[in-house]
Every structure is written in structure tokens, then in C-alpha cells.
Image (tube, rainbow, N blue to C red; front, side):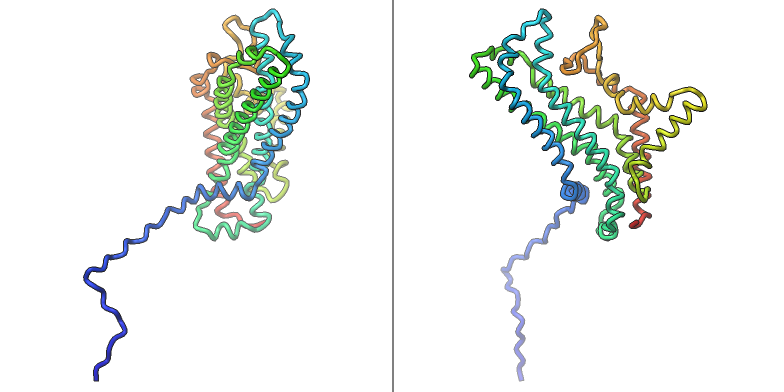
Length: 313
């Protein structure tokens, strides 16, 4: 009795199927996307600040042609500063907004997932603690500065178009508006955002570390110990070394990265700083910068270790 098999023999001319190529998972990129999905304030707050500024600028267009028409002071550099103010204020507002968003994001980045117990789910995924912490640190150090740059450039371009249109309708001097080197201001904004991100890196990383350690009141645990130490130093020794260090860490980037006085020793108006007054060499050789970056690296390493062993609150 013959038993016929149901199997169909392969033909000799059949082509072998190519092996399936698996795409790289890119856990770091997806971790950054996760932060953007879960924390919409990262981009909503700068967008809201840009919208509020544009609303105020649109209202000011009613009086702008009159102001620009009578802008003839004796100092030839003075009109340039006045023209740059509106554009510079947009960048300043968005930069301050991003700094505040970065502070509060860092304080909640590791604490929030412990508070809502979602850390148990994220730890079950094949994503290392180092990747997770670095992705969270990249938000205030990389993502927020990029958002500020894109929004500021967009707002400034719209402002220039609207200003020229308002001047043309009012028969104003359009040529005066073109004397402002807007692209030079935007290059300065990019340089300034890089400088601020590097200078403030230990602040964000310290807040991340406190976020992974504190069980509650992360803001108080992050801010009160340095202030208390500064107060103890002043009471005990009548010195303010720590207080000056904290002040320098917040605002010292301007003196390190820019020449804020011209060759005659006259202070430069911060609304418009020419490219010739940038000092990247002095900034990169500043001991304060590298000490801060070393502290930031230490804080990040400690945050990675904390997340490895910390559980939900």
C-alpha cells in the first residue's frame, strides 16, 4: 500500500527568501520621544510664551511706524540698539521660559515615575538605566534649546515681515529696518543657547539627582541645602564664597562667553552684541566651565545608580 505524502517538494528553481533584516530599536531616541509624549509642557510652554509675545507685538504695530519715523538720535549706534530690542526680547523671553521648564522638568523627571509607580513598567523594558537618565538629561540640555532656537527664529522672521508691512502702509522708512543684521542676532542666539546649556548643566543634573533620591518636596531638597550652607558660611565666617559661586553658576556665563565692554571700556548693550565681541576661546578655557561639567557628569552617574536600585515611593 502506497502512502502519498502531503508535503510538496521544493522545486530546484525556487529562490531562497532573503533573511529578514531587523531594524535597530534605538532605545535612546525612543526614550527622548517618550519624554516629549509624557511632558507636553516641554514644547507647550515655549509655544505659549511665543504666542503671548506675538500678541503684544501685533498690538505695538499700531504705534511702531510713528516711533521708527522719529528715531533719529545723535549716536549712530543707538538706532540699531532700539531696532534690536523687540527681536532680542523675544529670544530672552523664550530662553527664560525654557530655563524654568527645564528646572521643573528635571525635578520631576525621576521622581514622577516613582510616585505613579510607572517605574516598574519602564524597568521591565530592555532599556538601561543609563539610557533613561541620559535621555531625561537631554531634554533641558539639548531639546529645549533647539525648541527655543526654532521658535525664536520663526518669531523674529514674522516680526520683520510685519514690521516692514506696517512701515510700507504708513509710508515709513523701510530702509531703516533693513539696517538691523537679524541673521547676526540669530547666530548670537545659537551661540548663547549653547553657552547657557553647558554652563547650567550641573544645575539640571543636580536636580535630576535629587529627583531620583527624594521621596517628596524635591524643590526644597534641591534648593535649601546649598542656600543653607551659604547662610552658615556667612554667619560663621562672614564670607560669601559659596553664595558667589551659586550666583556665578546662574549668571556667570555672560562674562565668560562675551566681551561685555568695547575697546574703550564702555559697557555693551546686551540687546545687540556684535560677533566680534564673542569670546568662545575664553569660555572653553574657563575652569568654571569644566568644573561644572565634571560635577554634572558625577551627578548623572549618581542618578543612574540611584535609579538602578530605587523603587516606587
